[in-house]
Length: 312
Image (cartoon, rainbow, N blue to C red; front, side):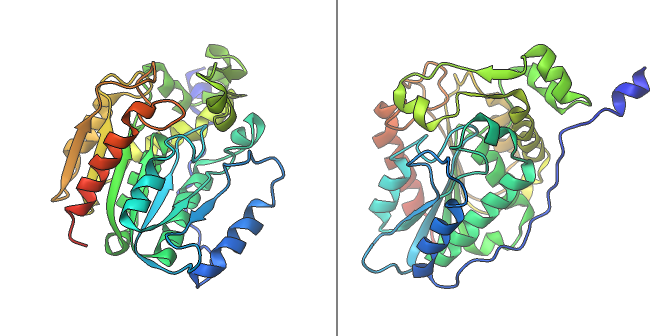
């Protein structure tokens, strides 16, 4: 019986990074992204992959490009307008990605894989390199797990990516039982514990629009797979400056895991900022007009101060 348990299916984790075919010139990217997103007819308006140009009339490379990786089950609107404000202040081009399955409803979310998201993140950085001489990655929640894994694995990122900003990083959900999803028969066990579907009530209509609030429980599997590879990543390899921003009262993620990752970082420049108050009852979405507008301006300035002190 015990042998039968251990041969049960586990979260598929394929860490292969695929070569990405992108236009060589910045001005060609808008059409590339538009055609890419037009493959899907169910993307929530405002969730699509998009470049916000520092100068829309001259779509040229800027000294710095900002790349944003959003969180699990949300979209680029989860911390809006944080990245837009940072990019505007730096006169930087900004690329906002859309992770596979996101912004398209629960069924699409459940069809995504760890490998999809790894390659979405890699593509985002490659686009950042086309629209900026150097790249700064800003990420939220599970997007931060993807960012940290990629930065630890792709060594030439040290040349092109000059800073990582991690907001409410998800290196482990708050509930310890979530690790059950990584066990053999994880999907089956999740259905027994959670049910076949996971649903939650949005705080307001905007959150209901830009987050997927109901999805098959198997959608949680690639999220946990992403968390697993981030926890196991050799973050000691990361040389970029790292800014980590989170609430010590986060009820969604295990902040002790974030503290552990921060301690392991060997970069010469790392900084941690605690946000003690937010308008999110779970203290996870600690910035952004939709959930926690009270902190957006302050955190924007924190990020700008960190970036402006860098030598890049």
